Amino acid sequence: HASVRIANDEVIVVGGVDQNGALLTTALRIGVRGQVMVVPLLSRGRRFPAVAATRQFLVVAGGYNAAGTALADAEVFDTSTLQPIATIPLTAARGQATATLTSNDSIMLTGGKDSQQGMAVLPIEIFTP
Image (cartoon, rainbow, N blue to C red; front, side):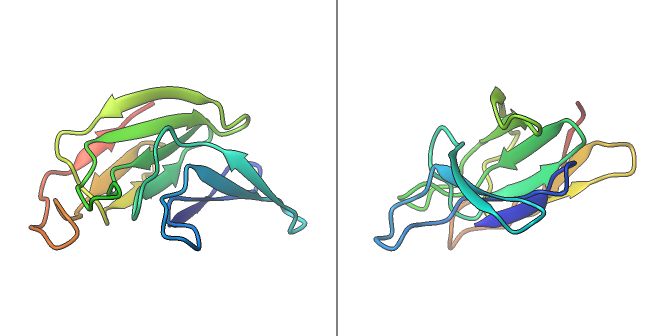
């Protein structure tokens, strides 16, 4: 799983597996007072996705499917409503990558592997809203 703080100081936790090992498509939305809500979010489960948020957008990129294959897309959500906005392709499939919010409100996606036991992924990708 991965977590990120969004603009209203809530924390969103996405990805991972349940107690039976099934990939989760839901997210935990943790409020400023500690209240926890389970919300539907992802179109498909992702293990080890990269997650970052701008003031407007939550980006959940890459990760692995249930077979351990790296995913080559990112899901984009509105941070205030968590409604899906788009699914965008990545230039390289990757899991275990890092998503970093930059000073100009872009998200930089770096590193990762092409499968859970695979080769490192080199291209850096930038998401600019």
